[in-house]
Length: 229
Image (cartoon, rainbow, N blue to C red; front, side, top):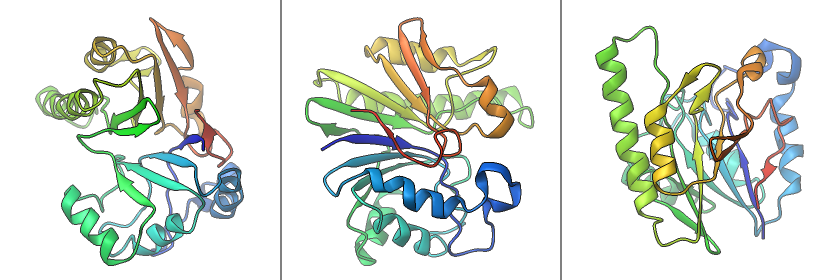
């Protein structure tokens, strides 16, 4: 049994919004994902770090969830900034159960155990220039509450791995509140997505102030889940 991570699948089986239009690595990306997931066995676990489906409702995303269901292994989903289908945990779990999506679960205000390692995370946030300082502060505060809830759920674990959609560090932009929270709970490894194409050059990788960062956007890791453990 192994633990993997990948972000930003941007699936569009139910709507006409494929990423192939961006060219480059995104050409035939869903076929690449199918091939990439062959590294997993049915006993493995994969954390999917947001921007999973372009559907704007659970129903519109159903074919994408069925695609994920048919991929090897178990999957844990985190919300991304484009996951407009996301609703309450109870509604999502009810929808998954109703449609016999048995290999998919949700990481939101909670944690999962992988042997003696805890899997924690949330969407996270980076300031948006289109929003006011007050609006950005409100969203950041909400994400900090969710991340703290996830980390507190894992406080008895010997090691905590954190999975986010937004990077806590992006070039000269640093989300000090998120990093402070990771340090408070002794997190040493953080995985994130969100960045694409030219954004990859801004990605933070390696150890910074005691935390190791890895970008796992699908187009960065060639649409093949990265093995974490």
